[in-house]
Image (cartoon, rainbow, N blue to C red; front, side):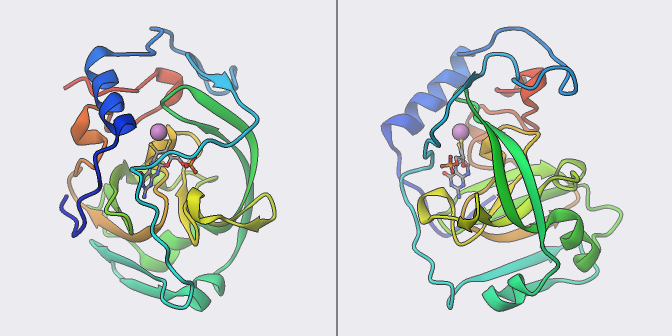
Length: 220
Ligand SMILES: Nc1nc2c(c(=O)[nH]1)N[C@H]1C(S)=C(S)[C@@H](COP(=O)(O)O)O[C@H]1N2
Ligand SMILES: [Mo]
């Protein structure tokens, strides 16, 4: 995937790249999401750490736009008012970051990905989504994961608008995958026929990222 802006190279970004080659944090365990709330190798935190490439874009709501394109019947382009006019959902879910912290019971409000899919109607061949963010970040997801019943395009967290450092005005939240798949400052969703690796996926991170199977790093 190519994006206009090349994100900066921070110390944490370099460490995370090294951890992928070393297989750091891997416990070798495999758990069932239904039987074990905390995935293997994770620990609980009460705060909410900020993780990104170090470039936090400031997008005023009046200039914000969100596009859906690629292999869909109905491409979409929403401004902030149009986004808020969509059917709204409210989910309480957990966060699992690949750097090993997890945070329980986050209350999100926004547009369920299921409702977005009803609106854009992906073609049958569209089996993956490529996410593009305002900071130049990209990530990829199988359509099936994107369509999870508790995944959403979130504008609020615990009753207040999502802060800029956590991805406001709007971010994706896909609770059952590691949090790097939940793109902050989401700008566009592209529906594609073949998987396109994103920022972390080309740097050694897993193409799917299921925490209960410890899909931290890429195997190919
Ligand atoms: N646009 C964008 N989204 C991103 C990132 C990023 O650098 N840019 N980092 C990812 C990573 S690695 C994590 S762990 C989470 C962190 O979200 P938080 O800062 O709200 O905790 O955002 C993910 N989404
Ligand atoms: Mo992360």
